[in-house]
Every structure is written in structure tokens, then in C-alpha cells.
Length: 116
Image (tube, rainbow, N blue to C red):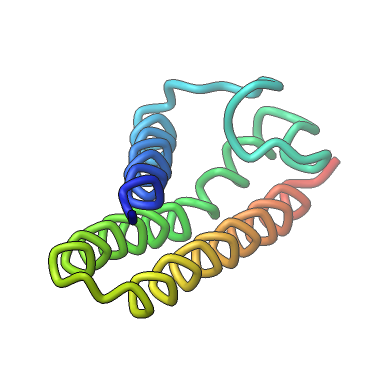
């Protein structure tokens, strides 16, 4: 029953980790397809780099939350505790959305600090 949320968590973890590695190795330049794409981060290459560097801690948090909740849901599935599983599933997605919003906020602030 909790396998779809577990798969979703693992996808979020993989994408977040890919973005962290890509930022560290400078694999992804400014583009309109992948990354933290806002008006401020797309303004210049310097804004893009600063914004993504500021968002990295939140992406790490998303990886930890996603993997932790996937493991927790697996334990819930094995113990057949459906109420706990429902709460864990919703809580995990809320935490991921909060981290994503904080990553965008940090990226925008860093991108704006680079100047025009």
C-alpha cells in the first residue's frame, strides 16, 4: 500500500542528489529545463551559480528526508501499521515541499545579491 510514496521519495532523493552533484561539478549551466529556475537565478550565470550554491543544503535535506521516509514507510509496510504510514507519508511530502520552498528562497536571495 505504501509502495508508491516510497518510490516517490526515492525519485525525489535521486533528483536532489543529481542536482547537488551537478552543482558541485559545474555540470549544469544556466538553462530553462533543470535546476532552480526563477527570474532571479536566470538573470545571469553568476546569479545561477550563486543561487544553486545557496540551495545545496536544502537539497541535501531533501535527500535525507526522502530516504528516511522511504525506509520508515518500508518498516510501516512490514508491520502493517496503516495509520502511522499515512501520517509518515503526508509528513514526508510536507517536509520536502518546505525544503523546496526554502531552497528557492535561499537561491533567490543569493542570486539577487550578485547584482544586475
